[in-house]
Length: 397
Image 1 (cartoon, rainbow, N blue to C red):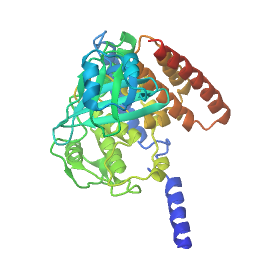
Image 2 (cartoon, helix red, strand yellow; image 1 turned 180 degrees about the vertical axis):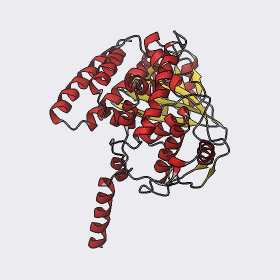
Image 3 (cartoon, rainbow, N blue to C red; image 1 turned 180 degrees about the horizontal axis):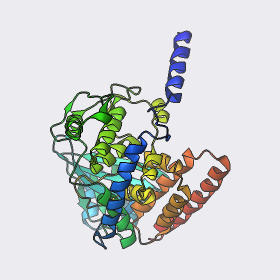
Image 4 (cartoon, rainbow, N blue to C red; image 1 turned 45 degrees about the vertical axis):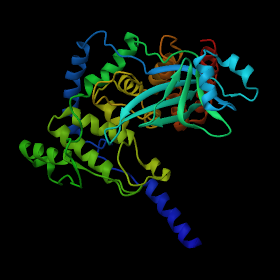
């Protein structure tokens, strides 16, 4: 058994050290020919963004501050007090054992799941991270004045509710922030998706001689790849990432820019379906941010714009994963630019609290992946001070 354990550990270690994708002489996963083709496309798209709508309208997610409250009163009785206009202070006089949690930001959202059902979600956040998630499909979320009664949160001993300091609100984002979001929507055509709607599970690999194929052959190959979704069987199965890399290569060869960028961003964000996924495999999955920097994209604006969360995203809007984005940024040649952008957004009192918290989480992820211990210590000290200041702002508003 001990020998088996050692062998498995060595296998995992070897797996994590191995190069994920073969690199060209330029040190990138794309050839110089592909890179030059992409540069030409980006130049024209940057010009397109310059003449896009000057003041786009994006709105923050529905949000408000409040407390998670646990009461010894039955839910029916608690609802009566809520309907009578009792606030948190008044309820304390009725329930000596009332337990009030720390001040948090609550964000309300909804989406359609795989079965076309509307899913209602209430999430809570603090400067320390994502605290709780309440998710419902058929059940009703009952709001009485400032009290939120969530399904299945009561038993014979206690009733758990949320007390809000005010109604959920959404506000228009400032022009500078909105332009960052718009840059991503300008580069990534929201009318296109990486896969066709009727794509089926399977696998198709890129031919070794793809560079000598005709344009029509490459276009047909790209259609076949976009008609095929690859599902990883386990953590060590890198076929979904290789499939995305192959789509990106053929998309670049056929000047299918939006398909290329979505595929590359999926690799960066590790956005793939797997039957199972162990954390030991994460380290090997590189972010390949250097490839985007090489083709003259305004990477800081693109990355920040896809990390920011909004209430009214266009269909097929691309959101980056905060954890993967943070790792990618830690490897960027523009790290100082990123750092200043993020810290400015956290300090922006006109920006909604949810996006300011998202920027804190992003910065902390960058710190975690920073290898220079001296720089990491300075960044950690900086973000801790910023969190104290934001906590004070939240408490006073």
